[in-house]
Structure formats: structure tokens, C-alpha cells
Length: 353
Image (cartoon, rainbow, N blue to C red; front, top):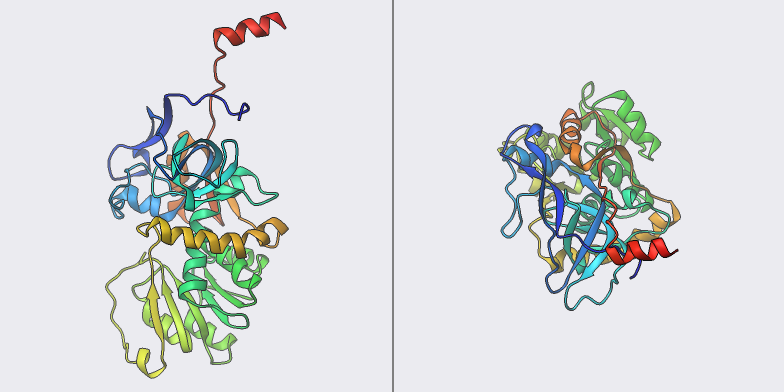
């Protein structure tokens, strides 16, 4: 505990001045929060940048009730203060956490159930790349999608943070993996991560390719964040008894098509959001990850793929990269802290030495 420096009264965070372009993200100063009962205060070393952050900045994804308008859904760092009732963690522990907001800050509070130890062998920057994508992939592919060993999954956006995570976890649990991506280079990167087949959606109709490589059977599970015109094409690419799992509608949520096949081929179309779920629900996902996935991370069987890292103060540049869709893997923010100034007693002791 003596190795943890004093907590300052103020911190740097990224303020959204108004909905709109990335330039509206600017550094600002504000008070360091205090942990409520059941929460820990984390001195942030790194934070992840995610597509929902961009949507919120644009005004298309309002934060849930009780969340601030400061962006950021995942962090890693050091526990520096405990709220009443916290039992698992101690001051000085290295952790990563899923947060509902405020990740673009030097300090953030997180509910204890949403906090996880840093997997053995991972840096804090790597650990900060885990929560949002790993929580999302686990809860949607394995909980809702019920992907099983020996089945086939189609993952859209294979080169994204979600996609690179989904490829590795699906392969680790014995699935055949098909992905879509927008360039040949991205397709190659997905295959390097373990994808069995990669489809360039700019040049090929993915539904036809899926049926071809599965010899007409189709995929058992499809993870989709596009929606819109992709939905009827996804249904065509599903196997009988297949499951389409929707995690976003980047194209459109207004959809038309022949949905009789939901009945005739016993298809399931489901989906979920992560951010509005209760702390208990997120805690159950965290427990499943720690039991099933953290050992894989510690062994190096799966790993976070980090494309680029920016200083916290350059969050606007990170958002521009996200919007360009030229990245492969995660985009991260590095959070630095000024060295604490020694008090007079400390100065005197140093002089005596």
C-alpha cells in the first residue's frame, strides 16, 4: 500500500464539448471521483476506444441513466482506493474493468463485479483492450448464440476489435470460423489470427460464399453489427436451426425481407446490448470470462490485437482512426500521470540522505 502515491484532488479527462466531430473531444480538468460502496477507484494506465464511443460523440448513442457524458467503456490500471464492502481487491492490485462511462480519465470508479485481475503475462495496455470486446463476444457468441465445438460461425467485421476477439475465441473453443472484411489485406490478417475462410465483402456476395464453403449447409451462428440489408442475406447464409446474433445496426434498424424462413428453417434472430445491463448481469459475464477465457490469455492461446495507441490528450486522433475503418484490432489511449511533488517532510528526509 505504501507504493501507491497519494490521490490528487483533480485529474485530466476528455470532455465532449458538443455532439459532432472528433475535434469536440478536448482535455479538461475535473475532480477525482470517490468510490461508492461496492466500487473501487482505479488509477488508469490505459483505456480502450470503441465504436459506441464514436456513436455517442456523434449524438447517436446516449449514455444510460446514471452514466456521465464522459466517453470510455474499458480501462486498466491500479486500484488506489476501496469503497465500503469491497472484499476481493486490495489497494495496489493491477486490474482491468468494464465501466459504463468515464474511461477517458486519469481516475475512474468501477463496480467490484465488473473488475478483473490482469491476466498473467499481459501489460496494462493489453489488459485495457479486453473488457468491452471480450464481454461482448462472450455474452453474444457463447451465451446468446450458443456456439458449440464443431459448429461454423460467420463473423462480420473480422478485422475490428470485436472481430479479432471473436475469431480467436471461436477457434479456441473448436469452431470453424468464416469472416468478412473490406480489403484483401484485412482478410489475410483475419486468416493469420485463425479464420478458416475470409470473404472480401467488397468483391463477393458473402452469403453465396458461406454456402459454398459449407457445401450448402450454411453457418450455425452469425455475429452481425451491420443490420439493414445484411439481415435477409444473413438469414440466407444460416444453416437450419441457425442463430443470428445482432450487436449493432451500423447500416439501419429498418429492415424488410421474407421472414417466413425463421419458422420453416427454425432460425433464431436475437441480439443484445451490454452497456445498460445491471452490475449483477455484467458480473456474471466477468465470472464466465475469468473461468473460461482468462486461462487462455495467460497461456497466450488468445491475445488482444492492438493496432495503435494515442496519448489520452489525443483522443480526437484515435476517433478519426476509428472512423476511417483502416485499423485491424483495437485502438487504445495511454494515460500518464504527473509525478507527485514531495512534501516538505519528504524533502527534508531526502536532504538528510
